[in-house]
Image (cartoon, rainbow, N blue to C red):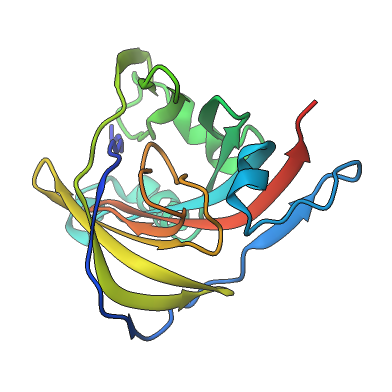
Length: 231
C-alpha cells in the first residue's frame, strides 16, 4: 500500500533584487464571485479578509519510476493514470479559520478506500487540515485504508526565505520562496497581487497567495478563487 502525506508552513526573510525568469506554463487563475456578492477587489487585502473565500488547488503526485516498476503489472496503468491527472482540493476560509479538503466528486476518491486485504492494491492518504488562526491551532487528519490519525498542534513555523526570483504563472507575476523542512526542500511561488496569506495543505505564511508549490513528492497549483460576502 502506498500513502502520500505532506506537512508544512510559515515566516519569511526578504532579499532585494528582482529577476524575472521563464514563466511556469499553467492556465490562468479563474476569479469567480457569487451572484449576490458585491464587487470584491481581489487585490485589496482588507476586502479579501472580510470575504469568504474558496480556492481550488490541483495536486499532482510524483511517484518515482523505480517504485512504479516494482508494483504488480495490473495496477501500474492505474498509477500512471493517477500521475497524469490532478487531484482536486478545496481551501475554504471564513475570516477566522480554514479547511483544506479533497473534492468529494473527484474520481480519485476511489483510491482512498482501497481494501487492505487485497495484495495487489494501493491507496492514497485521505488528507485534510483545519486551521484556527486566532488560537494558532492546526488540526491534521489523515486516513489510509482502515487507519486514521488526528494531530492537534500549533501552526508550523516555516523559515521561508523570499528570493529575488520572479516568474509569470498564469496571469500573475509571482515571487519565489523556499525553505527546508525535515530535510525536504520546499519551493513556493506566491503573488502579492492577491495579498492573502494562504496556500495548499498547510503551506502558508507568505505575503500573498501561493499559486504554485513544489514538494518532494507532489506539486500544487491554484486554479480558481471564489469570493463571497460575509453574512
